Length: 76
Image (tube, rainbow, N blue to C red; front, side, top):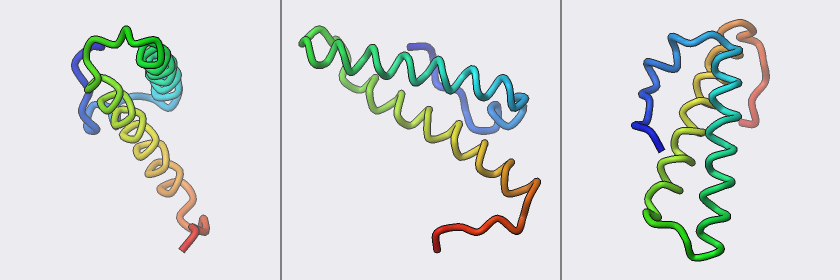
C-alpha cells in the first residue's frame, strides 16, 4: 500500500474524490484480509493502516456533512 495520506490532504479533495478513494482503500482492505486468511500476508501492519485510512476518510466526510447541516442529530 502507498504512503498513507494525512487528513489535511483528504480535506482538500472533493466529495467525489473522497468517495473514490474510500472505495479503493476498502477494496485494498478486502484483499489484505483475504491474504491474511490464506497466510500470504507479508506485513500484518497493512491491515491496521488500511482501517485507519478508512476512518480518516469517513471522519472528513462526516465533518463535511455536519458543516452543511449543523442540526443533524447524533447518537448521543
